[in-house]
Image (cartoon, rainbow, N blue to C red; front, side):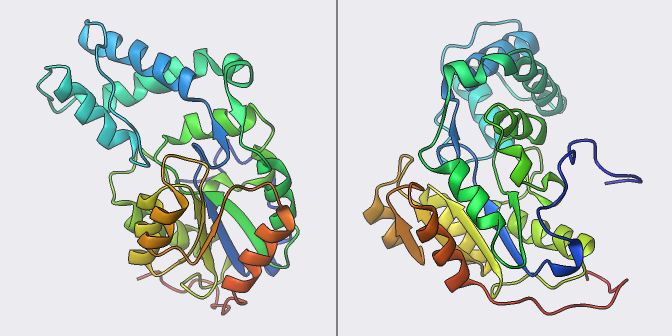
Length: 263
C-alpha cells in the first residue's frame, strides 16, 4: 500500500493491535447496506462518460466484483472492451458514486441489525473487522460512511472489487494484509466471512475460512445451506447470535515473529 497509512483508516481498530487474534470479514451489499438505486445511477453515469452512449442494460451483481461487472456490462451493451476500458470505467464509477454520496442514506438503507452486529462483534475478544466486497474500495467506504458503519471497520486490511482476483483468493489476500499489520497468523481457525450470497459461501469454502451466511440478499437460506455455509441466519437482527456464531467458529491466532515473510 506504499508508505504511510491509507487515508481511509480514519477510525482506529476497536482494540489495541497487540490483542488482535480473530479476523471477521463482511460483505457489504445486501449484508450491511442496500444502496442499489444509487449504484445503478452511478453505473449509468460512468457508462455514459466512458462510452458516450446511454446505458441500456446493467447485469445483476450477485456478489461479483465491479471489475467483472464492468466487462459484462460493456459486452451486453454492444461495446467491445479495450485495454483502457476497465481503469477508465472504475475511475468514472468512483467519481459518479462520490458525487452521489449524500444521497446514499436517503435512497438506500442499512440492513436490519447491521450496526448492532458490527458493534457487538467489535467487542469480541481479539476481533478486528474489515470488508471482503466486490465493490471498489472508495465506494465501499462511502457506503459504510453513509450509515456510520465505517467506525467499526479497518479498511486497510480488506479486499475490494478493483482487485482482479477470484473472491477466494481475495480473502487470502485480506488475511495476508491482516497478518502484516497485526503480526498474527490468520487462517481457517480464526477467519470468518459474513455474507449473503452463495458466491460468498463458495469463496469462504475454497479459501478454508468459516462462513456465516445471512439470507438477506438474493440467495435463499436453503441455497446458502446447500452451498456449505457453517451457520445460516435470516438476518443480523440478533447481535448476540452473531457474536456467538463468530466466537464458535474462531480460535485465538498463533502469533508470528515481527518481519516474518508472508510467502
